[in-house]
Length: 256
Ligand SMILES: C[S@@+](CC[C@H](N)C(=O)[O-])C[C@H]1O[C@@H](n2cnc3c(N)ncnc32)[C@H](O)[C@@H]1O
Image (cartoon, rainbow, N blue to C red; front, top):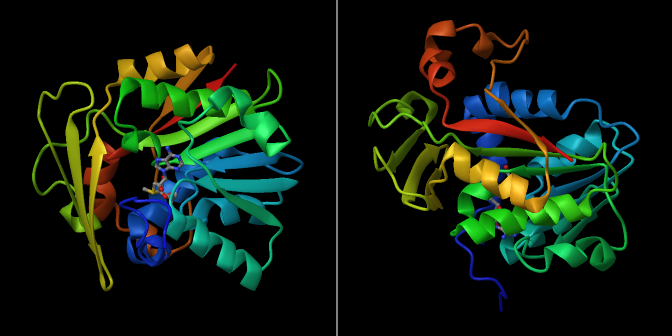
């Protein structure tokens, strides 16, 4: 029987397919996120809310010294661990709630990290305290002043136009003038999959407060960009125009 009761438990296969079947994930999101992450060789990396391990494996492939993935969902960690057994990359996966006991994370894990990543995890924090707790887990997991936390979050100014993201295979629904923690619904379709996920709206100020309360001093926001690639899918500028003009996600980089 599963220990977690997460909306993500049955979604590992969907997340794995989404990187190929939702072209914006590969050509914009992953490209941009890994660009902000930069060089990972020789780094010890922790991927919070690693899900099925898409980014965890991408970072390991880039030659990080050691990589660990944590996720609260049994279904996600089960998939990621089984895949690691099948195709070993030296990644450790653990089930853990990133909002629990942030101050003891390094002692629990028995190590500290040079880089912590969290792709689409902060939008699932249901309170400002939860948002701060995830940032605090990242802060306490990092080793020194050079340690960085890089997170992909929901763009607080995502387009409220109903069909803005439709050609990318998704719809986002939320209030035009939301209060902090207001519901945001993501409906996505790709291949044989339909996803319906409930997330929470956090303003730029709420994110920055969470990062600062956790201890981070320098915070930089990055807008995603289109991959500089020979892939023909990246050549159709018209297709990507809406997304780039008003992306549904932004990347935040925080350092101590
Ligand atoms: C939208 S999925 C993203 C998965 C992966 N990062 C990716 O981009 O493919 C969000 C993941 O965050 C995990 N998550 C949400 N809240 C968490 C928490 N408090 N602690 C650990 N994992 C969490 C979920 O279980 C889920 O796997």
